[in-house]
Image 1 (cartoon, rainbow, N blue to C red):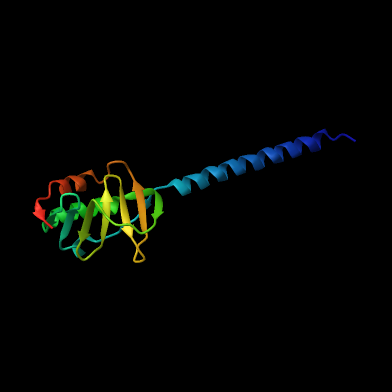
Image 2 (spheres, rainbow, N blue to C red; image 1 turned 30 degrees about the horizontal axis):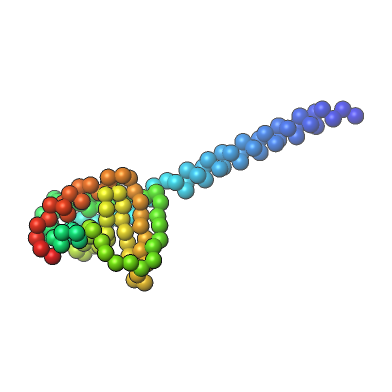
Amino acid sequence: MNTKPIKKKIIWVLIGVAIIVVIGACVGVTMVNRPKKLFNMDSSEVSTIIIKNGDKLTEVTITDQSQIEEIVKLVNGFTYTSLEELPPSTGWSYIIILEGGTSFEFWESGVRVRNEDGLSILYYGKTGYFDSLVTLADNATDPM
């Protein structure tokens, strides 16, 4: 009995299965590492934005609707690729408060959200994404 044709079929089936597994793994990795959105706010529902600098103890208040729209667009455009949970802690450098919306801590490349139980979640995004907000906070002169 000639077993060569059967062996060839088995080899081709194994090659096909291997290709499917590799493609599946690539799709899975792509889906896991895809940037995720964190915010979806309507700028018309935000009347005031306050950006605070915890290091200098200063803040800036923004009421101009065009500036509010710009900042809300920036916040809504933030995406993260990884996150980290931290135990309760104190202290912060920059906070943004979107009246009628939400508030969160931020740095040049990410966001920190504190839960009611004190735990924090750090969301890591594109390097330098919030540079413009950091500049606003660093230039703030109104005392807190």
